[in-house]
Amino acid sequence: MPELPEVEAVRTALEPLVIRKRILHASVLHPIAVRPQSPAAFRRAVEGQNIRSVERRAKYLLLKLDRGWLVVHFMLDGRLTLLPPIEKAPHSCVSLALSGRSPAVLGFVDPRHFGRMRFTNDLAKIPGLRRLGIEPLSAEFTPSALSTLLRASRRPLKLFLMDQSRIAGLGNIYSSEALWRARLSPRRHSNRVAPAEVRALHKAIVGILRAALECCLAPPPDFRDPQWWFQGLDRILRVYGREGRPCRRCGARAPRGIRRIAQSGRSTYFCPRCQK
Image (cartoon, rainbow, N blue to C red; front, side, top):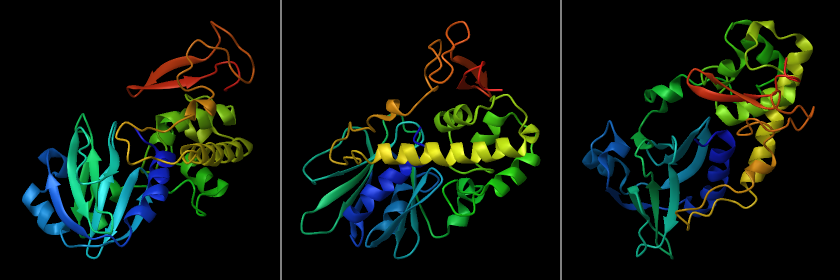
């Protein structure tokens, strides 16, 4: 699932390509993608509107229109394409024909149909957006703010970091990576983190997100290729997906190398020797 860095990279690359473009025509190929709206209601809402800006909130991509918003959540496999009208992307769910000297079609592609592209005239009406917590790359996300959130929770640290109502945009990958950087066990209770450890965790969260965003923009998303995906992220990952391999910090090897445990049905990767 795309997390904050991937969605921010999409926002950065997409905005100059679609800003001030008019949506001439909308096609809904898979109605599930625009639920709870009907395809007809979706088309009526967006056709004839201009795209004013492209924004992001947590893992949501927000296209601001003249009146209202297009809200995109990619879930597991969703992605965007921007192709000439004569080209068709496989697994397209929604297609928006855009104005311009070189006409293009903005497509929402999702082979498993978990993602959504919805129109709303009020972002507060989207339940997932309404519940979001603090943005970890914002000025408001300070060590003090993180400390306040941690003190109010007894959840294991990994589950706390993935709670979108606390910190918005962190997912399975970067929460594991942040805890490794901060040398904190994913099973530690959130309210048992010392002040110095809070500062280390704050630095780790911001650091891994910035590193991932830089990686996601080099190269930037290629919306002309429906199969394109972010390249080189494995270069910055230290624990995620490395079960049984040596820790890249302390050198611990099997059986004390990188371990994988399940927390609320999701895989967590950590080093039991140097994360306490």
